Image (tube, one colour):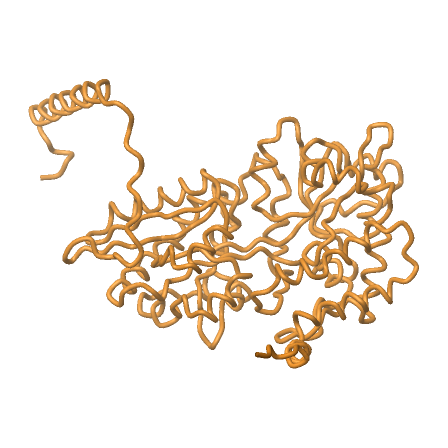
Amino acid sequence: MSSARVGWRTTLVVVIVVLAVVAAMVAISETRPEPRAERPPAPSGDTTSSPGHTRLEFAVWGTDPEIKAYQQVVDTYNEQTAGVDVVIRSWPTAEEMNAAVRSGDAQPDLFLLRRDDLAETLENGRSVPLLDLLDARGLNIGDDYSRDSISAFSADDDLQCMPYGSSPMVIYYNTDLVDFDKMAARGLQVPQEDRRGWTLDQFRDAAEFASRPRRGTRGVYIEPTLEGLAPFVLSGGGDLFNDTTSPTSLALGENDSTDAMRRTLEVLRDPQLTLSSAQLARRSGLEWFEQGKVGMVAGYRSLTPDLRRVEGLRFDVMPMPSLGSTDTLGELTGVCLGATAKQHSVAKAADFLIYLVGDESVATVARLGYLQPANLEVAFSEAFRQPGLRPNNAEVFIEALRDIQMLPLRDDYDELEALVGPQLRQLLMRPVLDDLDVRLDAIDETSRQLLDPTLRTEDASATPSPTD
């Protein structure tokens, strides 16, 4: 009998029963002390809680709202799926999660992974190749994912992790300090009306317009790091490394790279346009931006919710300025299957992975504003674009996806940043810089200490052997 044909007596009985249950629940809640904490995840390796019932651990990192969104996805899956219990294990940062995984304290069946950590994960055999598993479940990854996002997580002729998040680096700007309409009225160079791109000269004019000494504001701050400067180098036709797959050195001292750096530093070094060392000793560039004292900073989509919470801050986004092309860097994340999972759990984990990257599951997380989905169907939907919320020009994130340039797959980018960081900071902070070519060559040479295996071999052979 269909629900539409249930008699009024049956309906009355149902109502009475529901009221009785609600009353009982209220009485219990009034006498209950504190609610119990969420059930902790099962110990690593213990994936089967009872015969025929599989327990899967999904390792993630993120803010509290993000973790709650992942939990919502997991709860829905558990309700809909018999014989499987997926549990979340979370950390505040990717670094903390990776440390737990690398030490063996966590052995998840599935885990989030930054592309920067993929090389180390593959080297230590902690993931399961996906193509056969996805094919067996009828998922055609070419339909809803860009070729670049797929290649970013591919190695050894297989997909190693499922693309999940993909955000280009863009420019966030304070619309009170950078007002393109007012700039145009004063005859300054401004982007075209659609705000889909701009030149370095237009970027400089915006920085000058936002720099107002009487108000104590500066036009722009870009982190003096490889990550911060790379989009400018790449856009100017230069290369960050001397090889796209197995680099032995940085390539900042090569012709096109040097020219791009020189043009970029003319803007970023200008003391009238950017923050001083004294200011940066008090607050970060992002903190100055949040206080309305800096016109522009660079960042990824994950920065958006934090800026939305800053009272009185009105902001929007533009692509990175062009020095000839629109190339930029990207912040990419994937979901991997853990190689430590028991054999019978891999199939169950793959089933959950298919659900996790489905449109509705991804949209649940994307609605928070942190995630730019690699799933293009969701990226073009209102779940990501969020009309009525800042930034108004959110299309920039989507259009710049095709401009993301993949860096070589390595596991030592943090070490490289630490190694050349002091020299890069000197480029932006030194009062006089009349020997740029020499300084860039020196940075390239310093990078060889880490990147050039022959140099490391020579250093090792030159080290005296211990004697008795």
